[in-house]
Length: 399
Image (cartoon, one colour):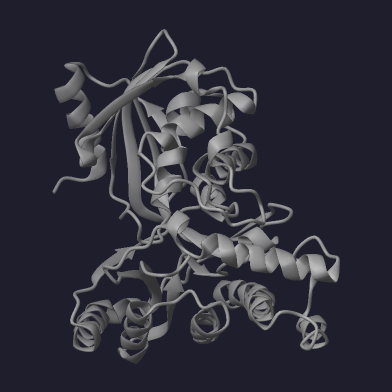
């Protein structure tokens, strides 16, 4: 199958009979460590993947967006003015965890982008476009944020604007799409790494201040994304319940977020707090510390320490936050047992999807063979693998 960039361009020419004049793009992402910490004002360490969502487009002189999802063979359109009434029917509220209607239509994401950008003060015009993506859907690799940011780049065309775009403002606007239009109480990690990624680097993100610290990946390692083949829907999962538990603990301590607590704080509340909520909080507080330590280790080339922190993160997500799955556990165990693996863990929201491994670059082929065989032996399923360099963030270019 051709890559998404080529599919988007060919699809546009086939559908509209013209050459596109604009290419917008945004990457998927993998989080090396720091899971379920972003919406707790904590730290994360993601990197952009080479797998990317692309939109080939031509601007229109009206307010209509006509978009073909090439990979779904589905076309739809909307008028920007029609989405300005907002998403009230989908709002779950920050602590209730009430889920929006399931099976959200794909066009809701572009609609939400238009609404959020207009709410942020951008003047928008329509476009004809074809969307194609290499980012696996539902795998925990931020496929929805990639689509959102690609649509935002098609609207705002940062490649044509002097100075590009305000990365933090765009990321915040795209987070609002997820929170208030889609109805998932996610943090800002996916959107921020999607716009602010640095090639060859992971990025330590402080999700409170939005400070960004690029962390160079050692030349001696490869990042391998391992797909269990199982899928989860965030709006149908326990994601919002986990966030609500974190907010309850923060409120009980009178602090803005779990970022402000220590392990000693939590130890003193063992008899007063709900045991389930406390387990969630224990994961988040420890994960924040692990993430900062991991960035330091990775920057210094200490891949052994980085790997050990990844393993501890997976155990915590499995036992305390309880968002792993039998498939994820089996894949991580197979990866950790393979020669050349420094560390492996589940990545993303959990309940299915992908794991990530840090691997000796010279041992990647042997690692892949051993890991996929080990997973198939444990689960009877075939795992897909993506070896990816750390790519760039979202943007656009005239054609």
